[in-house]
Length: 138
Image 1 (cartoon, rainbow, N blue to C red):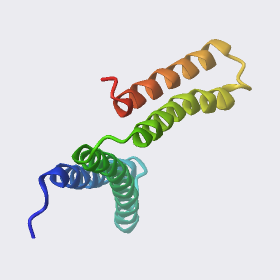
Image 2 (spheres, rainbow, N blue to C red):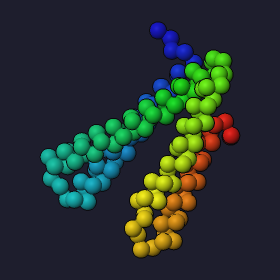
Image 3 (cartoon, helix red, strand yellow):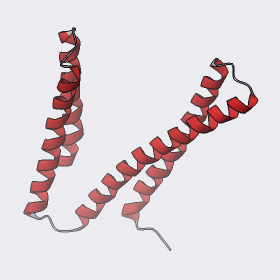
């Protein structure tokens, strides 16, 4: 069965993220095992666990991005409805508003206020940059 063109790229992206996570996990597990001076069985266990965990993280990140791209392709195929635009604006605004609040709450008890302010500002800029394509600003 032939896959529609709109879904081909997100699926390829998911596979690439899964493979990338596995490769990074394999290399990182081997590095950790070498630095830990592990024996052969512990070396294999370390490499296997780190590879599995990194592949899982890569798969989850790739799945999230593929889902976002697939939903975007699906949404562009239909008519623009006002309620869909409203939901998109609300979700993009919520992401851009929640990230700096979470960063602020996580850094509220730090002694270095300049570092905390920098973290909050960085979180705000990154969240706004991530939300801008969702709203169609870019």
